[in-house]
Image (spheres, rainbow, N blue to C red):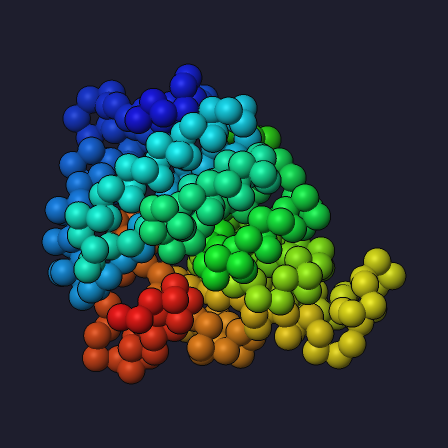
Length: 313
């Protein structure tokens, strides 16, 4: 808390049952952090046990990516964040691991922190937002993607509500939590499209990228994107062949947190059942009550996660 200067983060309360979480001018109302599994590791372990989850990889809070603030503040924050997170998981090595927070407004600093987090802190990869000052398809990120491949670690991407510390989003999404319900789905699909159409997945054939919420809207827009890649004048030559877009889409890893078996069936068709892992939004408002431990599909998702995370057990 307070690690990013005047941007926060900060938690407080306006009275009983009225907690808030502040980042810059943004305030998340009504979500309790203190005394919850978001902050209390013992409570998290208890809740994991109750849910049937043996092992979790902890990630940065999407509200605190700080991708758009001054680079020096972001670099300091990410370093402190990762140090504290690594110290926490070191106390529970058989139950918890961690992903690194990175200062993505500086590709060079992001590389430095990723290498430190993996080689010195033992983190299993990185966890970043879908929107960065430089587009994720920028060639300025090529060294970063190449480093992830060299370190043999995956990159996880999860959206954040627009306007936290960067550009404001569509004002129509500012009602009914549509910035989360629809905005996240758009950002996730946009991320996949950008990494494919922008050539990132082609330039880095060993790169593993995992998206939250089943890749958002990708299941219902993939065929249209593939058709555009084959036919539109801006599309590069390597995407014009039949099946080229689909082959790159199949490289992505997605979680199963989609609330709809029909969507999950589509995702299995696009990326294959071997690239889908368990997603729960653990401790969030839409966390499933329990994991179906007797379902063979649960076991396969666990095996998929082991491969994605390069974990032997």
